[in-house]
Image 1 (cartoon, rainbow, N blue to C red):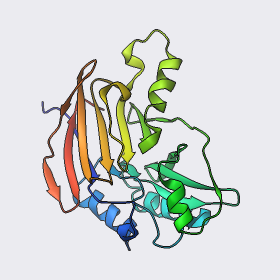
Image 2 (cartoon, rainbow, N blue to C red):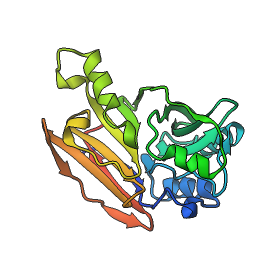
Image 3 (cartoon, one colour):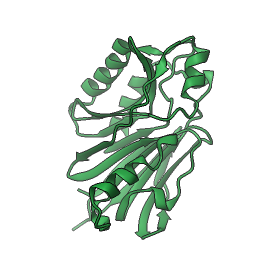
Length: 239
């Protein structure tokens, strides 16, 4: 019997620049998911960033609803990078988590890491929403989590506090890092043995998939194929 595999597509694109903005971005993501039969789609920090403003709350919700609706026929896990938006009180740097036609979680970045500069350049004179939230969720039976760039390490600490016995099984099956310049170290990735950390970095830019082999050792998984700005990986041993 063949071992089950998951296909993960990770974006390789420079962000944190005016040229970040792309027309038809939602449709491009949807087309990639269906064309390459992806189980997972991951984008970098600030993939969704208008040239001269931030998204309004309603625009942000429309983007998420459109992505969810156009992929509702499958349970692909979609973390389309982060998007900058604002409401009546704050501006946000948010990575949505979408699957099966629904928004299942959102990670709101709680450390600045360049977000305020981007908001200031776009004349958004609001305070950044900086309340920590732990973006942990289950997908296809896999314990999963998302962090955005300079928030790195928060999930690791949350998981350790929740299980003071320090038994590593409280760690994650899938860890997603939505980044623009922050590097990972093994001690900061709360991943179970033989499970995976997936990274999309908009600074270099680059895509990486790491598989934990021992307490502080990760192996690098090579992509199976490349499709323009998407690298496609195969993950084994998961649901």
